[in-house]
Image (cartoon, rainbow, N blue to C red; front, side, top):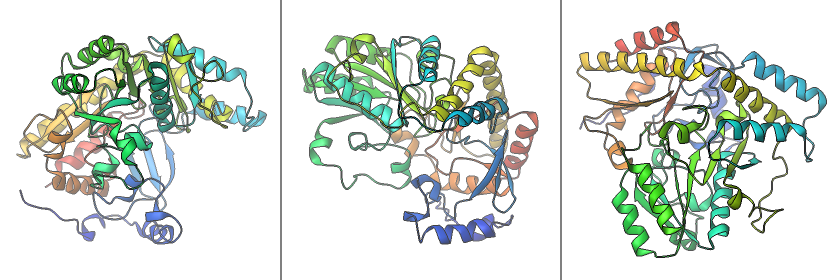
Length: 438
């Protein structure tokens, strides 16, 4: 396979002077110049673009360049940037207060709204991030079952809590980090890993760790090794194994929750989890997370039970106002989901036809409003097959698209996300850029 290396001149088709200067300054004050690793463009090469504003389907950087946005803040902007109803809800709430650290009526309304949309959720606890939601759900599963070990899947990312950084995807894959300094051996020993979509490997882990496994946690549709769908019978098989071994099935729906369907992946796949973790969309772009599930499990959380979990800013009124407005719009307009899928289907088909015509080997994975392009001839079903694709070609593709005003995730291991603001004009602009790729 020919290795392609990033050359600075490949992206200098637009002026990025101010972004470059800001990145130089940022590195003097912030580790790596960024506050989340994937933003550094280290995988794809070059310097990150610093953004200034956003509206609808578009981002505007500090140099005044406009981009069609296929990241959408890594998922939450399903309604597009600065949706007027979401902005208005936040502004109205800010007139009352920015934070209390005390209960509010809106938290109750938010929990009730989530329950009305998501299947199999009896109680919900609001937190401040997806990482916090997954970390808390795992602790709860351990406390509920009295067991310590859990199973996760290679390439699935559940945030940066110690227990989850064993064979995680996304950012760790981007930076080729196999072991993470600071994560103790004891923590790693309780983390059991299996390839995604491999049910036999999970059965083997249960057989080797009888009565020791508290939970299985997975992205029911993976988004951190590119978009990867579960094979037929896979999630159903995990549900059956958890029932047989009295383990808790945790769906990490931080990406898929309220994005793939009103009821998220549980509804889309028709499989119920015991606990579900939410983030992204339920904050409408603000930092919010949540975890919820069966009453008998959730009542093990303090102050009802003895499993401790707390958060000073959990249920922040401004953040919850943004999320409540977003979910309300989605609940009241179910056609949004069919429209999103129709738009993404159009792009998928046009991408496939154009790349085929160019003789570029590729696979496109797609479900609902999530999609990813893998440059390889094989089916992409897990981290190993994702990593076997031509990452260098993706990097070249990324910079070509960026230079044409199309903002894709700066890593081959990330899903693209659609918003309702992406329409025919944006699809046409995107495909014009793809047609010029060589």
